Every structure is written in C-alpha cells, then in structure tokens.
Image (tube, rainbow, N blue to C red):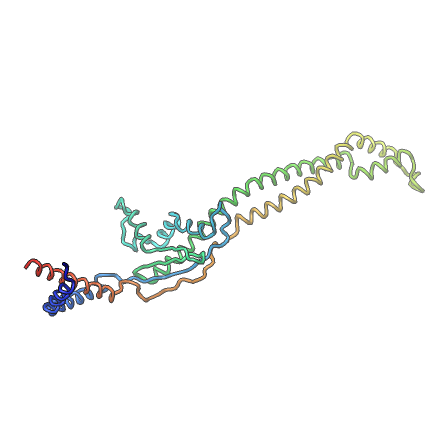
Length: 316
C-alpha cells in the first residue's frame, strides 16, 4: 500500500538535509536573474494606448461600425503606411533590402508591438509597445491618422464614381440648354418673335384694325404683315423651344445642385474616429517585470535542484 505520510516525511527530510545547498542555488539564481533581466541584456519596453470609437464609416452589408473599423486596422495598407511614415524598418533594425524575408520579419515585429483589440463597449483599444516611449506614442497616432487617411481615400474614390454620372447629366442638360437658348435667340433677332402670346394678340388687333383710340390710325401694316408671316413660319417652333427651355432650366438647377453635393463629398475632409482616450508618452516601463523574472527563476532553480536531489536519493 502507498504510504503518503512516509513519502511526505522523506521529502521534508531531504529538503531540510539539503537546505543550505538549495538556499545557495536559490541565491545564485536570484542574482543571475537580476543581472540578466537588467537593461544591459533586455531592453526595457514602454507602452502608449488610445481608445477610439468608429464614426462616419457608412454601411457595408451587415457589418457593424466597430467590425468595419477592426477590418480596416487589419489592412496591410495601414500597416505599411505606418511602417513607412515612421521608418520602422530602421527602428526595428530589420534589413528589408538585402534580406528576402525582411518584409516578413518587419510585419511580424509590427504585429508583436502593435495590438488592437475590440472592447466590450464597441470601441477599439490601440496598445503599442516599444523600447522608446516617444516612438510608442508616435505609432499610436500614426495608426489612427492612417486609418482616417486610407478610409478617406476609399470614400473619395466612391464619391468620384458617384460624381461622374452626375457630371454627365449636368453637361448634357447644359449643352441642350445652350442649344435651345441659341435657337430662341436666333428667332428673337432674325424673326423678331419675343413673346408669342402678346405678339399674336397685337397682330390680330393690327390686322383687324381693332386698336382703340389713336393707335388705330398709327398701325404699321407692313410690319404687322411681316411679323404675321414670321409667326406663321416660326411660331410653333418658338412655343416648343420656349417650353423646352423652361423645362431645362428646372433640370439644370436640379443637376447643378446634385453636382455641388457630389463635389462636396469628393472634397470633404472627414474623420472616421472619435478618440475617447488620447494617447500619451509614458516613461513607466511595462517589461521586463524584473521581480517576476527573479521569483520565477529562483523558484524554478530551487525546484529543479530539489528534483535532482530526489532522483539522486531514489538511485541510492
């Protein structure tokens, strides 16, 4: 039968018997871990954080705004923009020119140092760790700035696509309006048709000599007959052209307004993040946690030494 009490007594006995040796091993492990966890061997790292809410992203299928934002943060374009903007290849000391895997290592290093997580409040928390507190701060701002820049460019492309058909419609209406306007001007100057209704009435009165008072004796029948002939020839065309002209004026005003709106959409400078927690420069290091390294290293060394002693005792 397995004697647990006897085994525990043996363990305690071995521990007490070798206490001085275990204490020395623990002390050496503590000293070594203190030395090797220092800045000479492990670069201290600092952290900068920001919390942002999505804004003005629009709708894409069934994705929520925060899901869209997280997709954008994961895009390679934003990562490469940040890397290029801040010269992270040189900062991380990665040779992307001569090393065929340099770009792979660079993106891997970026992913280890830049963490973006969705929070339970449907915002995004950006956490950047770096050996320089100022650089960590710059990277956070660059990530946010490039998110706005990339989405803005994408929305501008869409706005340009929407602008083109509006421009075409506007130009078509303007061209037809100019053509009708030229035609009306020609009929006014060459055929003296200015107001069809009024002139037709006056022609009838002059032709029939039904003007009242002094006007009845001063009627220029030659001009009346000339205008009558012009109206007979071009009156119908004038009415149609004038009617179409006023229709085109309404259409022109509509498409002019649509063109202005579409142009504003192309040129507007929008932001797509609301910053809830502003990033800041922190000089408090987040790694390495020296006390934890010392504790784990010391305990591990003592435990391993104790196991070796147990094994040695078992062999005897």
